[in-house]
Length: 111
Length: 108
Image (cartoon, rainbow over all chains, first blue to last red; front, side, top):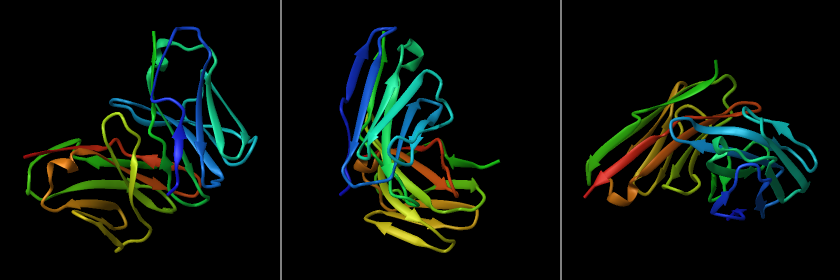
């Protein structure tokens, strides 16, 4: 089975901190994605990547950046965390043309 | 406008009471419809992929069907452990569209 592993299940950070969320997949998938999920708003795409060192903005990229230096790893960076970035963050990967496999999620609280 | 709509938003069933969840979509160039199950505080877990109208997939008490405009997730004789949020997503040439989910609660 494909595994998508997110480094933390729960994180608490202070406003203004730089935050790194890590995601690793073990099936050589080309595509990787970062979503956030909020009650009443559903899943919203932040950034995605189709290949190493490539990145594309999703629907809500403001306040975030990403890094993909290796095919298996896709990092989401909150440059200066704010309280409105408190959310569940979900990483996903997929081979070209197929559906997603999601990680277990990171619940981030910014105080 | 491409979009996915799920109904109902929430559904309460008694154990053993069969029902269906709906996912209607308006997406040009459908390249797959996906059903996921999500438990509280966890990531969505893949259930089914459907690619063409008339296709059906089954897994235990769940059966997914697809027409040109919508998909149904039929739940037969549900158990309390089937309680979760069920998400539908569709893919066109270059993007995924997620519905907002149906929260299912099965009472013993």
